[in-house]
Structures are given as structure tokens and as C-alpha cells.
Image (tube, rainbow, N blue to C red; front, side, top):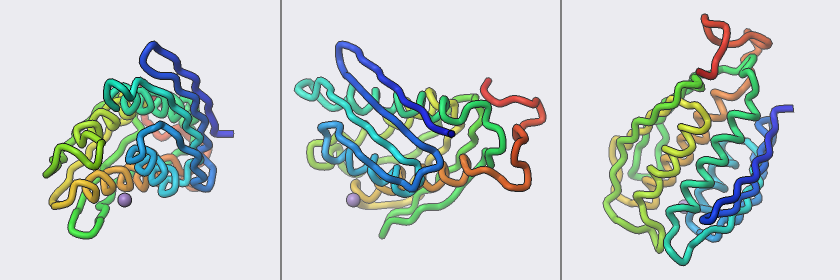
Length: 197
Ligand SMILES: [Mn+2]
């Protein structure tokens, strides 16, 4: 079973999270941040990774800790669920259009965490959500999942569409990269014989 559960508690946030890589994209999400819930719902739906994410954070300060810490916990869960990464496709990339916006995502489940994030937002806020937190989530998730992750928005005008294209792009890339490759099922897709560092 490629599943994982994470419980993470600090003075800033309390998070309970469970994922199933071989799910159907079922999402039960409650972070207290409406726009972030919307993005996580998309992430689950389009990756087909079941996600149960319950977070309580210091939202009276701002959304930063909650968004970052969910990224950390979700990254840890992905890494744990992948185990020794046997049989996975490993690489994926795609262009994700969302109306006037186009974002490219390229992903390697490498065990060598690295984020390149070339996405700019035309507005500082989407509702109450600071658009700079999109990068914070991707950074926390990539580092803790052990992903080499490149995200680039080639063009776009609407901040909501730009954020959504990033999350949907990540979702679709994850779906392809974590999928078991039937041609090499049971093999670890590395000439080193191991992934994870
Ligand atoms: Mn939307």
C-alpha cells in the first residue's frame, strides 16, 4: 500500500494528514484558508492522490505558517508513501493551460530536492491569500518530498488562474511521475540502484 499519515504539531500549526498514492483523487481538506483549500482540492483531484488534510494554524497572524507547514507535511507524506520508489515512472513534464495562462511543470522524483519557480503574479493578493505563498508551498513541498521541481509560468494575466495552473500542473506531473511504469515494475529507476539522496 502506497499510503502515509503524518501528524505535525508546533506552536504555530497542528496538522493531521493522510494520503493514498493509488487513490481516485478524493479530497477532504480543511486548513482554515479558503483559497488554499481550493488549491489542495485541485491537487488531489488532478493527481488522483487521495488527500485528507486537517490543519489548524495561527491565521490571526497570517496564512504563512499554515501554508508552509502543510507543504512540509504533504512533502513528508509523499516521500514516506513512495517508500523505496520501486517501479515508479519518476520523470514527468507538461504544459498546463488555464484560460489565458500557460504554466510548464517538470518534475523528477529524485531524492535531490530542488525548486526552480519562475512564476510572477500580477496581484499581491487573491482575496485574502498572499500570492507569494504559492512559492512557499512549492518550496516546502519539493524540499520535504525530495523532488527536483521546475515551475515556469510562460504567460498569464489573472492571479487566480496563474496559481491554479501551478497547482494543476504539479498535480498532473505528480500523477504521471508516481505512476507505476508497467515496463519496469519492481525496478528502482536509477542507475545508482537507489533514489532518495
Ligand atoms: Mn479556481
